[in-house]
Length: 262
Image (cartoon, rainbow, N blue to C red; front, side):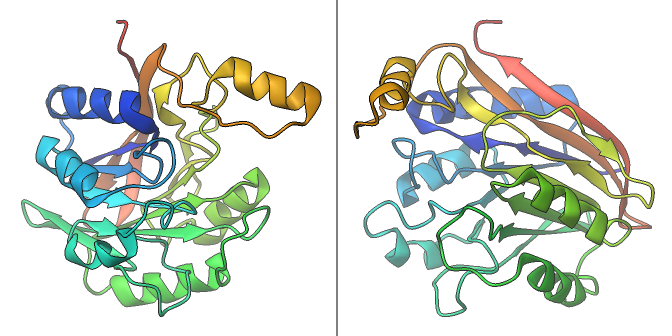
């Protein structure tokens, strides 16, 4: 029974260093066959670079997904096509560079991996995530034993709606973007594992990974400020999903949280 470990948004140097340090041992401890990580905030809290992607892959991450900060780092649009284990959101305009999905194979098990962006409260231009998920499921079902869908969305309602929409058609729908782990993880009635938000891999003594004082001050006076990445109470958050290769669905869901401080 293949096990897939998903790691929520990696935030800045503290998050990526802890993932690089722990992913191999965590994989062994949990018996995970495939590791997927969202790394759209891995470079200074906004975006990713080829160098960072290569470091994460070398450490033991099999697939890297991205979100609305995909193009935040200068020149990444010219690097992404060379990164075979990285995919950008599938419902961005089709002329955008980068892969719209990945197929990760381990011991004969083939897992399709894709991300769709939400359209509520996110400003990056994207097409309907529900229709794109339909198209991708139709494309991948003959190539893969199971499909993992990441819902990179601001609105919890949009994530939950997508979970119900895909229940019974994919192995998992896991939400990202809001950086706060939710308590609603489960296997849905027709066999799809669902979680509204996996949380982040990064500093939890923060406001969504950023310095507390600067963010609070901005809420108080409305002035624009730089929000540096925080560095305390670093954790890895995500989930572990047992998948059935014969049905393409999930048998078990478990939320994962590991603290650097022990």
